[in-house]
Image (cartoon, one colour):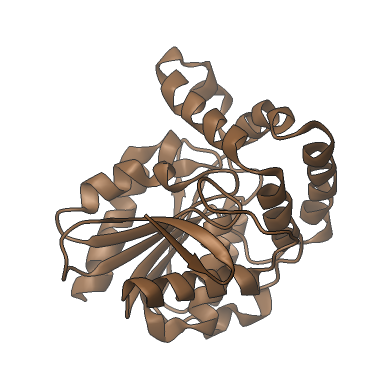
Length: 267
């Protein structure tokens, strides 16, 4: 389904029974709604899910960037309003998880819970600097030049070496290739300006911070930092896994996520 909001034509998907509690899923950089296929299939019996392609990703249009987290947060709220979602559990990974921090801080009354996975609260200079080169590479060579370097960062060597995982890796490669250069560079600009660290204490909804043990981009220490700042939150390290932990280790990721959602819903 498509809808135009904030000047953008958004692709979104609804699953699960009407009247059930809502879960909003938000994708990582250079992926789309299909990264959540397994989770949506498992939850669709007891939750109503809304997932969408972030601006500039998948089948959502790509306005000129750079973007900001304020803009990405406003997209989430506009979609929730348009679909009729009063309050929801929010699940985001990487870019989607960092967007979730902003939703929880600015619009906590709209959330039932937060799961910020493979995320971080602040773009320190060491983390922000490589985005300059990646943005330049995308503009000069196109998204194909980013496919293999991204896959190498996102998944452990053992996972990539196992032929049984080829379908997952090929799915990720396809999503990267299909991301628009404008969408990638726009969202990368938002990541370079990330700074929710001073406001983490304002998050008051039940929160889960979960990341892959081998995640070099949003390492365990980042989740532990957010956990320490958010009262009553939970921190889980997924092992083995790198950055896209729901695709590399879905058994552990999903067990922790589903327990978090059910506890927040029934608590």
